[in-house]
Image (cartoon, rainbow, N blue to C red; front, top):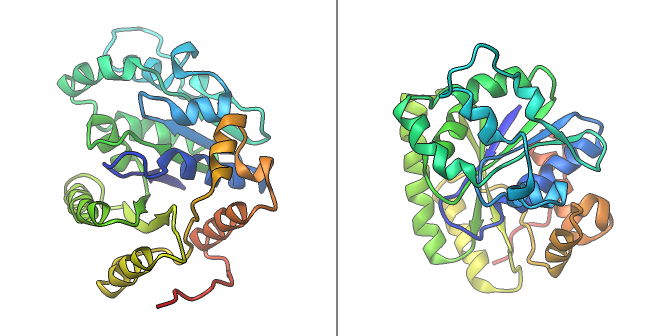
Length: 265
């Protein structure tokens, strides 16, 4: 399964959600790949412990092969890096993605990522794609390459307005480029259950028929500690409440039963 985590708004937890769901998948024994398409490289740094600028054999190097003439292009699995965690691998980002984007657009390489990820799907059970906070060439490529889309949502009114635009953009892309893509769900992130506004917003989105997932991810300093230690929560704090929420979210996405507290008025 290929999942993309996407939102045009920054700071909504795309990298944290991508890496922690992937880490749970890997901890369950599944060969799991994180594809980092954000030039900032937060997922790459989180899982490999190095800034994207220090990495070699990146997703930018892989994509550059499509616009550079060569008799012997390398296989996509040659750009995959092992992490310190069993079964968890990264196709890392690079700042060079910014400079490469115009070339790829000019050569109409929007479907190339799908080709590469289909090939990698032969070696990996699950693929999670992290994206930049923009609807750019790489994000569109990811949405074309993916089978499922997860949308992190900060519980405020600005995020709500942006959410409608995101869903419209995805709907157009589904119709024109990827009928297989399904919006798997909206993830309420940094949720504060004691505050009335987040509860109200989630309730209203549900009443509108939007696919808000039943697991809410709480706001916690533990996530920042996880970033600093370069360890996903399942490894750094396996019994923490936020870790259990991520595990519940993973179960929901995979059709497993989960006992959840109802949303209070």
